[in-house]
Image (cartoon, rainbow, N blue to C red; front, top):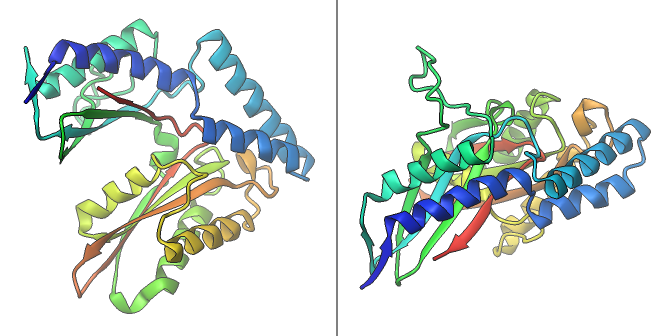
Amino acid sequence: MRDIAALDITAKIRDMCIDANQKLPDDIGSRIRACAGSEPWPQARDALGKLVENMDIARNEKMPVCQDTGLTCVFLELGQEIHITGGDLNEAVHEGVRRGYADGFLRKSVVADPLRRKNTGDNTPAVITVDIVPGDKLTITVAPKGFGSENMSRLIMLPPAAGEKGVKEFVIETVRLAGPNPCPPIVIGVGIGGTFDRVALLAKKALMRPIDRPNPDKYYAGMEAELLEKVNELGIGPQGFGGHTTALGLNIETHPTHIAGLPVAVNINCHVTRHVKVTL
């Protein structure tokens, strides 16, 4: 059994909240730069150039890359041989978010009740997902999620007969309906399978996989490539100005499901697809 202090988790998440909001992952940054260099449509190319400039300023000046610093999603892969000492794991996470958003001068965007809408003032509570895994390590992923893109996400319970064709049509329809609203170029996470609740989590986790790392299953890797091409053929383009760069990447994650169901979820993220991963 290995001990990890709750205070150490809090300190680490505090730093991760700040880093995630100031620095885009390398795979996202590299794809934006590549698209800015290859986009033929002048307005789209100009918009992508401004995104590159904004990204560089945020990293160099230690400023948020987007004014919407998100609702903080925290994914924990908790080794079953770990013992958390000196406090509660969930509260350690919330306190880390609380400190990170205060110390990093990050916008607080969380309301305590979905209808009465009073801001909590510290961007807590975070949305915490815990997976119990073998070993004595704790892997933390902090992913602030802006809601301009989150609001464009959709879930459907398809009949199995809809098959691959139905899944593809739903993904394309979701992006088309979103149009310029999620601040494209976007990153698309697709979940297929599981249950109503699990498929949404699959789509969210799909956004955590680097967009330059295809699905290890060649069948789904091919579907990712095909859907990304079709999405970019929609011509929505950066900020809705047209062009070939509606999406930077598209990842699919799957899970076994019931013989009577075919759940599909599409979680859309703007180009600010922020996530930082650390293992303790």
